[in-house]
Length: 448
Image (cartoon, rainbow, N blue to C red):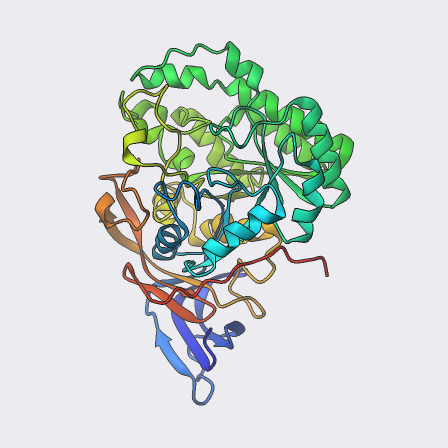
């Protein structure tokens, strides 16, 4: 944490009130003032002038699979947080599965924290898991500071994290409502998936048919019903099907505590462009058609969707075999989410203020991270410095995550992250990371 006074000046500071020239004063790692650009800095302050580079709040990514420990060959806290910092992400929340052990008891949480603490280049928090067998563990995990509880309605892909059957979902949702906790859900209906054709093979069209929109739509309807009846705060993860948007919008209009996210790959990639055999594009739920993508963008614009997060779910290269039925499902994008989304957003007439709202303010609000998510006094001095006009072509070898497999290889994006700042300390500059790691472990903030 920076202990002196620092001033960052930019012609384009993205604040809650809009984008404007400003000078941001930082003391003790906290933003203490946002003043006019031309105003003289406080005596003795160190001044960094960013010129025309945009100053955004540090991104908050609430959907990251770090896989550490247990599947550290897939990813790890050191590599994941390096990728995050290089991509302008200053806070991430780790998903409770794909690591061994999963974060389903307090003892398992402590194992995760012990591995993450010395390795984190950015601030890291943890989701707990809701399993059929661990309802009694939910309160202890909540009291230990997890940010909420993840559940699957369909198979998760790993044996140690089974899905919730309808009765299990009711029990978990009721307990989480008692805690005023947050239930976050992979929403695909297992019966619909079982009835869908499961052909396997290299054809993307066959894979898309195996994960139909109806599976998402019916699962979302079930979750809205649970939230409406029990009052549980429910968040729908990685929404892919635009057909589910009316149900979410109607629930919100009725005051049902339901929120939803989508991901960069659903906003920037389309089914029509996925080559057969290219399983680096495989994820569940899947990348859908261009018309579906248009509806997701409209839902971001009107507030039906609350945030954009990566669902960074990496694996070793050998698991991406050219058979969509057999390959591991997950897209690696932690370092690339901001330029991917900004490139598409600017073409659609959106601004950096919109992107900051979707990728920083919204996720911070979801997790209750009151010190994150905006450039305003009282918040942590977490910043992303972006050259919005600069272009680059994605070279997988230049990425910091452990396995250099990404659906974005060879794509050209606008928006180069020049530097990333965590509590007033620059932790990344032109892709190079500072040492030692400066990230802290976060716990859920109790209600004021």
